[in-house]
Length: 74
Image (tube, rainbow, N blue to C red):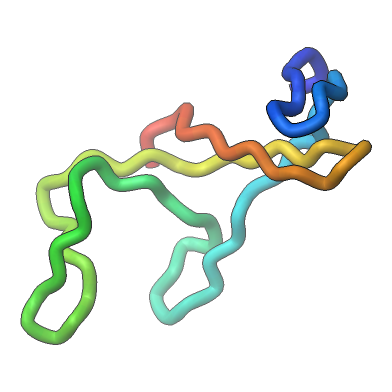
């Protein structure tokens, strides 16, 4: 991420990181799931059969803006 440019202020070099998910039964990191949000009977998101991607994040050291990337299947 050291060559990526911030889309907010134009600074080069984003600090790598990830978005944490510490909810019940979580894996510790957030995921992006393809398709629109559909809720099940108990209100939770329907996820069965959908492709999931780990979310990586880059933080701009100048302005603090976060850029999110879904690069790797989770």
